Length: 184
Image (cartoon, rainbow, N blue to C red; front, side, top):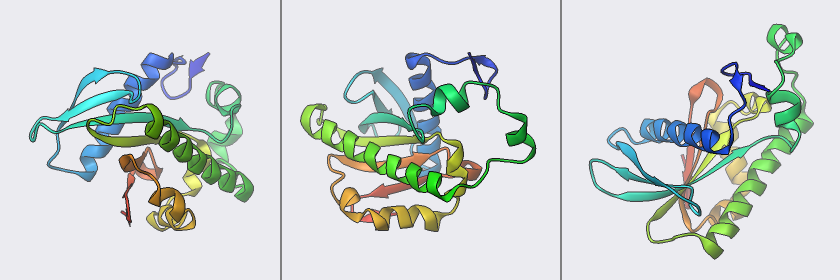
């Protein structure tokens, strides 16, 4: 099976995680221009430890990639993109977009619960959310991301032990992040 982004075989878990940590680092550095992250090590709970070369501060980074459902990858992301999507575009289905928003929130809840119970909390934790679903093109403004946060305030208020949640790979390469009590 081919990855439609690269026309290469669909990456295995280690390859996907390597791609995601690199994408996260690029995205994080667009938020914080004075930060220069480097990977210290790959692990579990969290997935990576990175360090700011300038300050020496280390962070644990937990990666997650969120799709519309468990069939999105095998049914839509691995097969060649249907010609109708490349010529007509992805159809807007408000129900699917709302379902995707719910999946994002459920992923956050699950990661927070796991982090509270079994993660290394010796350094600041960052949650990297690779927005990796075609339907995300319809959540394309900062205001829509802020609305997601506002509609789910209790979830974001309870995001500890994560110090930040970073949504990346958004429309036009933008990044949205949130810290407790503050959506940016």
